[in-house]
Length: 401
Length: 181
Image (cartoon, rainbow over all chains, first blue to last red; front, side):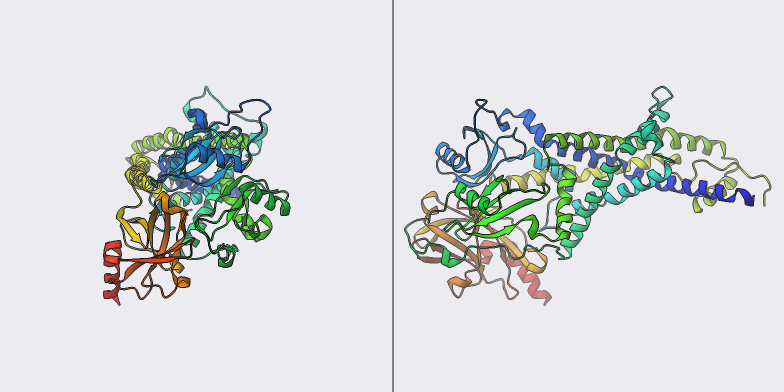
């Protein structure tokens, strides 16, 4: 007996890991499945809208057409819809999408206009129902309303990062020599459902290790972030939001003092920060607020912004990668890493495929349990009914070790 | 002690057994998004301005020569914003004729002593501006919500709305806070 002890211990330890692995997600499997599925849809929600609504596409009128500047877009929108107030103009990262122009109508409704980047034509108007935001809200906080910055739905979802990380680690421990699966992939289709779901679970699992790790870690950050917010802890170095000094605002006049043009603001920013791409501009929200020019710089995960004084063109505040602390570079990279929206369409599709695999991991895990554990245990319980006391002692002994 | 060791249950400790149906109970969590749905769409309509300027519209108010619509954004008690204290959101809308003449508008609970202390400045398009108004520690139910407006021509005009009219929920909350102290 003594000689076989180490091997038995190892076996028992691995068994314990399997038990933990099974208990981590199974009791919540439908919820986990729902969160993975909605997240998978959310990652390509913009592309789904692109497929469904021709007006959000950036249709190029001619092969040599050049995109309009921001001033030309602003003028085109104000000409087409006199009286609207434009609040921002954004050029989506993916050039297949039309410009997104935020406007407010005199009756107080705010809308997003889809504007052709080459002609300035208003191709369509977004509704109060935004599919992208709906999918994000469904996935991220179960549509639970925010109270201030708090949302208990957010906790329910982000707390799943703990079983997810646990499932990843225990899954790799349980799957002996999992690296062999990369060289000798095995997916047996004809050996019954149990074998099929087991093979699929392991195969999809080892190929999704980096993806699952990214999802679990970034979601874990969302949990930590919410805990910090709810406890008034911040890691931000951004400081007090900047405002335009009162003495810079023209004092006397009958009507609104003119702002410098949007393209001028962009050019001034570009002079100082040549590598900043001019992806969006937001117009001053009152007499003391800046024109904010922003876009991606050399590090694609983080948006950089510059606040330009709308009266004298001075760049009065910047929030660049270099303005952030090392900790902020990590924490602010978490969201783009989670959504995969920083490199273009191809990355979205990669995220979508791995999202589907992860969703299938939840389902296949449940199927393995259904096919194996549930049935076999039921059989065992039936067979062992006579010696129940003895068997129960065995259960307790095994589980306790 | 039995000398015959029974065959160990290969599934011991694993979830399952006769109560397997329990592992599908997490489907009940989906009641959360389903029941939160209607509220979500109401909030979206409010956010996009489709259901008006706010949940409780106070109508048009005269501020000197100008006219402004005022609304309580959500008809509930002030929200605890942590270190920033308790906040209450109000919204205003300028008519297109006045919009270009207004330099800045400010809200404050209690009469401002000067333009420098006019309160928090509203932001957004002139057709729909909102701001979180801090509820002062010393605020009482009889206080007024003061709107200070600065024109581009240099003129400053003010109007006061009793809190009882601006936000009954805030008055109720202040009364409760007063009783607790």
